Amino acid sequence: MIPLISDTETQPTPAMREVMASAEVGDEQKGEDPTVNRLLAQTAALLGQEAALWLPGGTMCNMIAIKVHTRPGDVVFADTMSHIFRAESGGAAITSSVMLEPVDSERGIFTAKQLDEARARAQACPEPYAAPLGLVCVEQTHNFGGGFVWTEDQLTSVAGAAKTLGMPIHMDGARLLNAAVASGVPASRFGGLMDSVWIDFTKGLGAPIGAVLAGNQSFVDQARRYKQAFGGAMRQAGIAAAGCLHALEHHVERLAEDHRNARVLAQALAGMPGVVVTNPQPETNMVFFRVDPGLISHGELIDTLAQRGVALGDAGAEIRAVTHLDVTSETLALAVDKIRDVLTAAEARVA
Ligand SMILES: *Cc1c(COP(=O)(O)O)cnc(C)c1O
Figure (cartoon, rainbow, N blue to C red):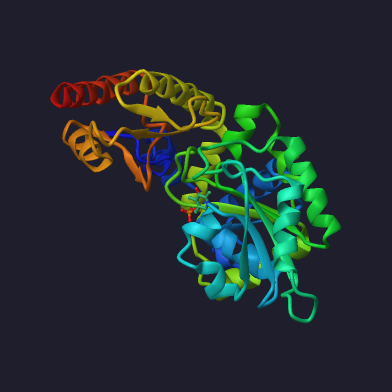
């Protein structure tokens, strides 16, 4: 099976498994796991922040950051299709009792003006009717938007607007390193603009477990308390952190390969019968496309290709294909042929 559903599908490589098996470990909950501590120091520096916290995954990073930055009833601004809004099972409401206010955006990237429009909506009534302003969240790269990259200028502008409004700003950086590799801007420059920021090691970086949340020391101290409360504290977590350290060393620069493969895929899809590619020039590792329903339904296309060994993602009105460590340019070419075969056959059937 050629796995194009998500970059979470990556299998740990033999080299990664080897360093994990021999990792030096201790009690992570007590701050005594040397491998975790090494990863935290390295990731804090990578993200342009003072300190960092080891967590089981990205969803908990978002949950804890929102908890630290807000009080119940506060308004949290996030773009309409952000992961925080659409893919965390209502977690921000459950754990922080906040009001989420959607911000309009251009495929996930919003401007200071769009943030202010959302702010004006949230404050349509004067105090004490309106809820207090709590936090601004951005997503780098933007997942459901198509893997688009916030430029440094765009982020600087929105971070400035948040500051003017008296709100901290948080980055869901699940794929921040894809953004850094694609733009050539170091992750620390993006991360340094934020009050909190995290990266996921289980997406394009290819590790099986782990995310790291960073901020200043005071933020991380408060975050640690919620990590304990939410059940995110671990024991000999160095086994997992060793995989993350390995990923930082070996799997970052190669993300450029995934981005190249995504561009190749988008270009090939654009020439196939009935296909409209939503992001014909992918900036990172995601391609979103639609197929003329008169030719074949998305469901039938996905099922038929699955039977032929190509797994594609059903993303609502679109189909999503994601390139990663376990998709080489050779296997991708094979997938392209199979997709073209199915669509060509569908076209002949209709004609
Ligand atoms: C995957 C993802 C998350 C959640 O991370 P997990 O490690 O799966 O909990 C959050 N935000 C974005 C943009 C993601 O893609």
